[in-house]
Image (spheres, rainbow, N blue to C red):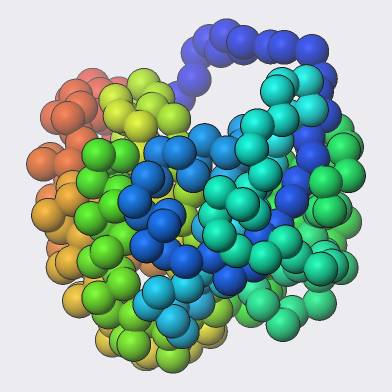
Length: 242
């Protein structure tokens, strides 16, 4: 329930989006903070077909701020020679404009155009958020099961999210690294990899995205969400079944 909402607004701004292909993962993990600071928003995409190379890195930069270093030089990859879809080989028409062409923030910060089908359209999604200090170790844990992930995975996106104050948020009280999975529409295949995947992320206090697939029966919510008890008390106070 929301009884009041205060918005922190700023004037509109423009964003230019560039894509870098075939980025060595070791270089990214050597300084993940520097890589994710290359733009206002940075997304790392991999199908885990290779444990050593990211398929793409998308860098979205505000044009009203200093340009900073060339992402391709920092990342050690190749500038994309044309438009890209986050899933390699898929028609890039649904993706927002790239190639460093500036545009309003709402046409660049999303990966997909508002008038197109986002992502693949036929898929299952999962996502876990880990405290930023565990980001590199968590990615290494995924790397260690790349061969298990790749057959059922369309793409994995790694991104950062700022801390917030929402009790049941994956980013409550801490900056996080999001580990997002767009799976093939294969419920049995996805179910088969979830136990190992979630087991590898347990040491990093990974919080699942509530609206995406995870093994809810295995979730220790009281341990992961500091305000879980307050949430239960609030439900009881308002007569909501727990």
